[in-house]
Image (tube, one colour):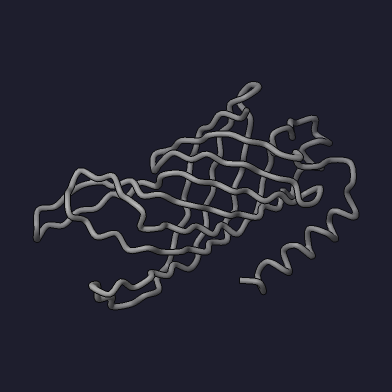
Length: 187
């Protein structure tokens, strides 16, 4: 992962040297909800165009099986760290568009950890397997009024399951997809 992050930060530093007029917020805090969960987040400035987003929340899972007639949903805790490069802040500023609250387009590396602390589900006796995913993502964030925001993003990356003693996994690695559409409130 370090080989992915280093070029992103070097690119951000080079671009940051050429553009000193616009900057991401020093720190922004908010809550977001979407079809697949609810989250609390903080973004902290690293450079003028790069921020580090930390997030904790509940991700939703929907599952079904014809063989056992099991259909349901679950909510599992999620911890995310995501460096974001906001690459079009200067262009937005030159067109007199808003950049407050880190309103702009971004490229990120979303790293999410789902621990097996607890799950909330409509089924009992579910066995949740801890996982971690690393997903390069492209996204946008825009403001709606003074405090409300919406965000959309898409990415495809790597997912690794952590094997438990009583579980047999056919393959411990998989493809992770990050497709999100969220509405939030910024404090």
